[in-house]
Length: 188
Image (cartoon, rainbow, N blue to C red; front, side):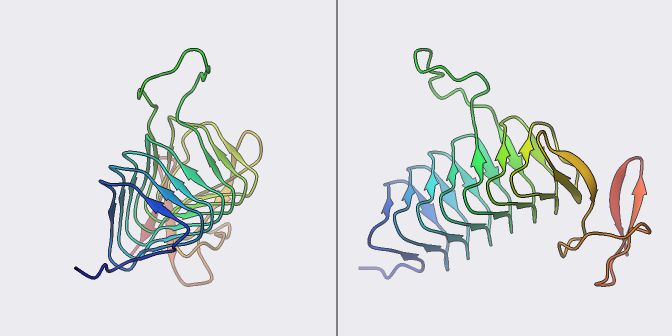
């Protein structure tokens, strides 16, 4: 028998057809449904559900009590805080099922989603963006944007390292940015 190169806690279930990358850890009471793909070196905390056909990049951290539904894609190095919520249907009705017709949500590389935030389906959260705890994302979030509130509104910019940028768009880590046509770009 081939030794697997990832860890699955004995209380968790991984359905046939799911792909799990090397170095990934799936902790207590998780369910990874079939035809989902989880990249390398990811961590799924307690009670995480990964729906069918979900795509998760490398280095993703999903904290406790998060369900990532069909139609959601998480690129590399995304952080999902405890109990953050994704949706995949805009007008759900129990008596009118959508039969696999889900609205796509994309969380771009390096984005962070705070604890208990909600991401309404059909939106993109930009590269290295940060969504504050408890926020409700109901529109697209720009790269490097810091959003908070209900509904989530941009309240600033964050560095790739996660720290809030000063008025000159510089970070204490030394990275510098420029605002071009309303979009933040890193200066090299």
